[in-house]
Amino acid sequence: METSVSRGCVASATASLTLAGKNALVTGAGRGIGAGIAEVFLEAGATVVVNARTDTHLSKLEKRLAAAHGDRIVALTGDLSTAVGAADLVTRAVRRVGEIDILVNSVGDAIVGDLVNDESEPEAVTRIRSIVDLNLMSAIHCTRLVGASMISRKRGRVINLAGVLGGLRGEASLSIYAAAKAGLIGFTRSLAREWAAHGITVNAIAPGVFPDRDNLTSAQLAMIEQAYLKTIPVGRFGEPRELGYLACFLASDLSGYVTGQILAFDGGLSA
View 1 (tube, helix red, strand yellow):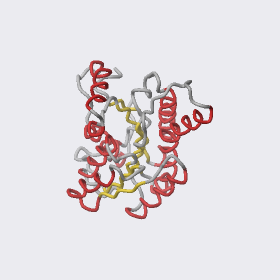
View 2 (tube, helix red, strand yellow; view 1 turned 30 degrees about the horizontal axis):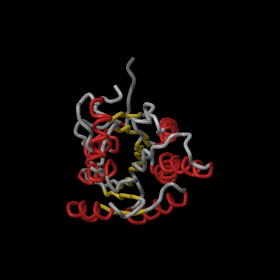
View 3 (cartoon, helix red, strand yellow; view 1 turned 180 degrees about the vertical axis):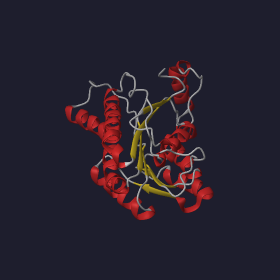
View 4 (cartoon, rainbow, N blue to C red; view 1 turned 45 degrees about the vertical axis):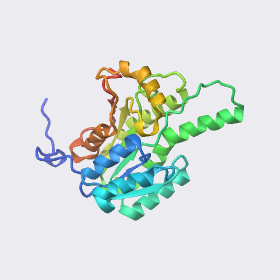
């Protein structure tokens, strides 16, 4: 069945992955996947605010990227696990670069721990709450805070970082993390429907295994290799910049017909 389509809604064949003139906020970007996404966004022409909870890695990243991209890179620390912390970050980001066109919710940590262990009850409750706040609530807070502006301007891109391990498939000792990432996936799909009429797309990328080689000991890296490398069909781990290319597509005008999707990026691990 043929249907008529408004040509203004469809990217032309000459469109590209440029993000020139766009402002992006990438949370959890001090290192690893978030840093890789930020670097690719800068190369595509965006102005990028990178965030991390502390300055441990952030200032070094800002210095390295500023050498090539000047003042289009802005680094802001902030704890996004609370509504107050998220509001403070978004306010400062908008003050520095203007309204946010692209939000990448990359904050997260696969915190290992059995559901029942020898913790006291208060310790267990605190641990569970902190994992959910970090891996789910931070994304909800930040998305809500940039949403009003995106809706009023009838454009925007939201990209959430889910996960294959504990997100798309079960993983022992990651039950709370898995619950948070499953919630993020449900949030992505439902919000995509809620905001589609406003010209905003909402998608998630589910990374496979991306070891942070700069912050792992050789023994830790060897353990990860032993546990997962043979299970990845392409025979290697992912690199943060590779995931950045997919994020760049989802952030660009070329992806206007892609929303509500959970895109595994895992070398075939979840196949």
